Image 1: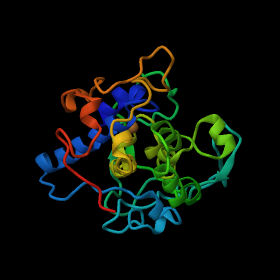
Image 2: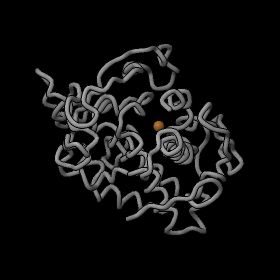
Image 3: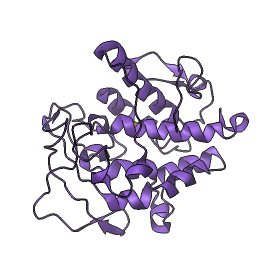
Length: 284
Ligand SMILES: [Cu+2]
C-alpha cells in the first residue's frame, strides 16, 4: 500500500483525482484486511472534530489498548513553537515528537524513509530505501482545535461546489495560510499527529492514515448526498498535482491507477459509495 501511495503521490494530491483515488485506496485496504487477514469488522473513520479539543485524551490516541497508540516520547530541548512554512505564522509545538512506546503500536518499525527533506514535486531517489525506524508522534491539539474542529467540518460540508470543497480540504481560511495555500483540514489532520503522518509520500505507514482518509471520504460522501443531482459526479482539476495549466481536466472517463493493488478504474466508477464495486455507507 505504501509503495503505491509513493508511486502516485505526484498525481493523487491537490488534483482532480484526490477524492476518488483515496476512496478506493482505503477500500482496497479494507478488502485486503478482510480477505487476507481474516478481519471481520469495518473500516473505521477518525472524526477529527471529536478529538480536536484534546488529542491525547481521545480514545483514538490516548495510548490505551484499544487506541491507535498515543503520543511519542517527549523530545528533550523541544522548541516551544513551530513555524508553518512557507509563512511566518507560529503556533505552539506538539507534546511529543519522539518514538511511540505505548499502546498497540508501541515500538513498531516503519521500513520506508522519512522523506521530509524531499522536495514536494520531484520523485525522491531514496523513496523505497529500506530504512527501519520508529513511529514518531507529536500530538498537537492546538492545530487540531484550530484547523479540524466541528467548525471546520461544518465549513467543508457547507461548501457550495466541488471547487470550494477541495479548497477547504487543502487550504485554511486564515488569511496568511490561505495565501500560502496550506493547512486545510486534510493536511492539518496529517500534521497534528507528527512527522510520520505528515510525510507527503510515506504517511500510509502511520496506523492512523486509513482512518484519516476514511474521514476525508466521509466528508466527500456526506457533501455529495446533500445534492445528489449536482454533486454526485462533480469533478474539478487534473490528474497532476497542483493542476498545472498544461494538464488536461479530468472527466468521468479519466482512468485512475493503483499499480499492483488492483486494476484501473474510471473516475465514474469512484464517484459513489454505492455503485460499481463499492457498497458501503457512513453511520453518523
Ligand atoms: Cu495521499
